[in-house]
Image 1 (cartoon, helix red, strand yellow):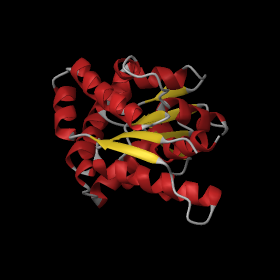
Image 2: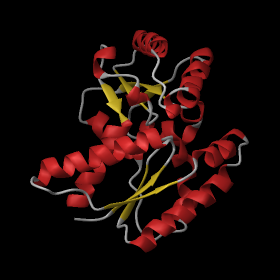
Image 3: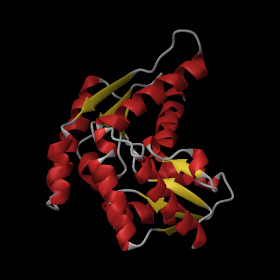
Length: 229
């Protein structure tokens, strides 16, 4: 079994879900008392979020690059970044290490391609929804990506940072997300990417009439697949 290096803490709410999912899947695959060989470095999210807000992505990239190097030195065979947004700085991280990074958008696109979905709605932080680093990675697989309007993007982003990252699950926010999902479906979305690792804490499969692609689940299970190859 390969050792998975997890860059976590962004937020720790979803990182805990990663740890749970990875170990549950290893137990499912191998049985008995088996659990995952993994190392998690959990950062202080307040520092990373400040770099996001101040548009200092290079500084954030160097912080996470140093984290990745620590994981490599500790024995990790490959890295997963337990957040969608911070894949924006993956180039800074890759240049500091010699082990591969399993990209969350690639894992998600592969899962979408296994379905009949070719037009997808994307929910996430405003950085993920508005900037090109994530959408283009999905679109390079021949998948059309739709995003909510600006007003909805602002609300979705606020709920992520002010509620979900703090473990605060509000029914009113679930209903708002459901409204946005319905709007994306009306615009032609055949499925929805839950493109922030916290959204799966709020939105469940039964909350939408189309398939949901929960990036946390997809990424975690793909990491186990790679670890057991």
